[in-house]
Image (tube, one colour):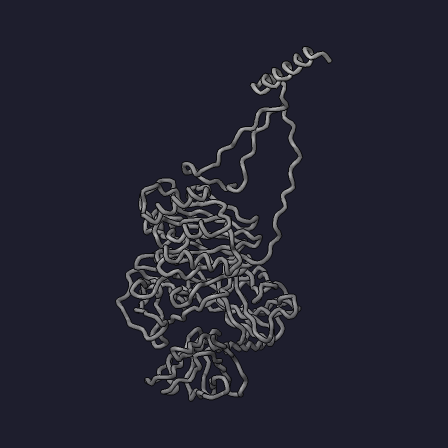
Length: 607
């Protein structure tokens, strides 16, 4: 090739390269040049919708072909709903683990507890959170969150009540931590629902649409629902917002109540307790002097039959809910009860509160009564109660100690592990009436209903739960009663009369209801419908090392008797004294109750 031609070709190639570098062929490229997408940082607050976790679909034009739907694989339920209310002193922290594996943390305790919360999550195998929620901006709720944001592998989303900037320093530190972590932040308002699992959700009850600029009034109030069970998380609920909730008509009933504002005076109005009517209540509180738990609140909870946990003495409390029943699985409840020689409050009087300092319960110090009355626990206007569970004969006694009939239609009995349930047919209990549910086959009638099943209750130890027609828990009873049915002769074997009552039921359902090893007392209760003569009955500890013989006296239907040891006093109808020295082993002991024939009637083990 001639040198001149070779030189020309080299120059032409050089020109083409320069032209291409200057973009001369961009109109013939296969697509647009890549665009760098900036990292998203948290922007202004947006109100979260019920489909928070799902992106909004893009609108399709008429000519757009609808693509085939992408299958969504739900994680199979791995267990019950588990709720941990952590002991973080004067603050709040609640860990929620859903059956399908989602994790939610509501509040994270004070600044000095953030590392403790992080360690607890790690001990539960939780290294990431789907949701981090702040009920309100006080340090006792958000102080520990920066530690979690730095220490967890992932936090999916942050939710609060839409609190504006410029609040307490702890909240400002949290906002800076959110900016650094890049976690998206959204606001919740009353009327929204956050769906966690298909069968588990959080209903937002507070704050309202209009902010009050008050931390307590604008606090998030969340009702965690799993099928027929519910847990009410009240955060720092203020009195005005509580009144709004009572007037709103929202469903407030719950199996478990997280008491707001560390149970301080005025934290929960009696009317709200009546509406929620929890089976369990947890007060997150510190040790004195940080402990500000109102003794009147404890008395009101007692009056409605609630089991109370205080985290400064019980430690972290955990509950499992299977959709039918919630059960405590961690934490020690402190028994707080009326002295047996004092009458329980009547519907027209106020409960007498007690000044309680750890350890709970007695001794009690009587204070002036509260100004707002609570209903009597012994004579509700019309409410069914469990009178006893006989594990040997597989019988359950249901009574109405109230003053009005109770329609039991579609109510349910559930055994201890929630594996079996009985649905009541059309049936009404008259005031003072009773009905026996007998496991096995038979024809309903004469005050006896038949549960068509076998081996429902474990004879070695079991419980029975009573739920109303809406699935709300009403009562619970441990096994140990002896129910003997004596019929008076043949009756109509058809549908039971609406107000049927057994002809004769020996309801000597005396049981050991509670045993306090530290305070040295044991409580017996007659949950039957007939007075029981105690002559010849006796009580022993394990061993037995000690025995108490009842010389006489009786227990009226529904009444209790306290038997004290380790102290002396004058016996009354409701209180007896055993030995001057201690009887019960603080590390663990058992109370055994025997009838005059020496038959063991009831056993209760503590702890």
